[in-house]
Length: 395
Image 1 (cartoon, rainbow, N blue to C red):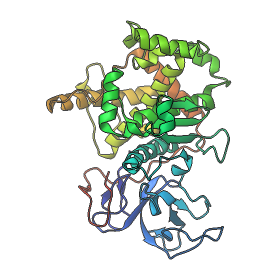
Image 2: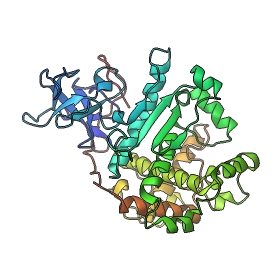
Image 3: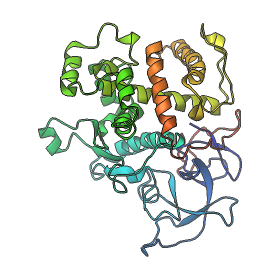
Image 4: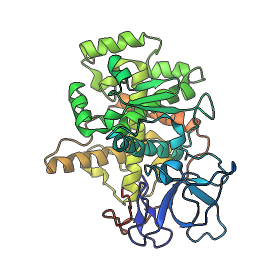
């Protein structure tokens, strides 16, 4: 994730900020520019349907005649977003929020907090997909598009049916909002014997299922997919039942990025896809902060590192691995120094890296509008340290 810079004062600001803690300017993420910008009010107004615009019009500070923006409705009205919508776009919601098909009942105590946590992680997913230049539209705009249902297992209808099942089907990603409760998520992680379980990880994994249908199914690379990941025509339900009954094969670590990836070729793809998104975004964050771990930190690294590269536009998987392996080795060692377990509980074998290369190639082959590198604040610049008066949200 990029480290952004306030247009008004030059202060370093973060992806989720809503105002600059240094100068107080309102901030908003501009999805058409892929950056957080400082904003100035530009008067009240009405949209193309003649309805009053919540929050009014805004311009980027310093752009007197620039593009006008309005706040996403979930920003202006609900306070769970910080994205802006350009005047040329008639939709009341931003590119992330318009993907929602169902949100939880906000009249139920606690649901707003859980939903806000889900939205924060979903925006990170959407940002990454936009940076990669992948096709991304809502199902309301295109039947082949993407949609989200955020549901609560505590709803009587779901209690009778055994609860909400997290998953993907025909472009619809469903998530139980209980996943946003850290205590519930930790219990699930222990029960499922998962070394790693996060909201963002769920989103990235389920988006992998969606993009398999968009990028792989029936396309020229479909047969090659079967060569690399296996034949997805194998009975999926039977494969999952076998996985949960018997566990992964004894040699899974030599062939898969995770134990769950061994369950079925679809899960192998989705786990590898999610892992690729983890890698590029984490490396992008390290780059934004000027963090560079020398290759000698990991024996066998190839010393081909380039500190000023862009992970989202890396030419091949080897470039990413030359940075990723030393970084994760250092992160795990730092975590252990603080008495915690590994922050990165995975081991990438040559077979797993080959699959990551396949994902990398598919993404590069299907980029619609490759996302530019945002204007990051220089490494070592000032950083926000907390929420100031006026509701500034910090990363």
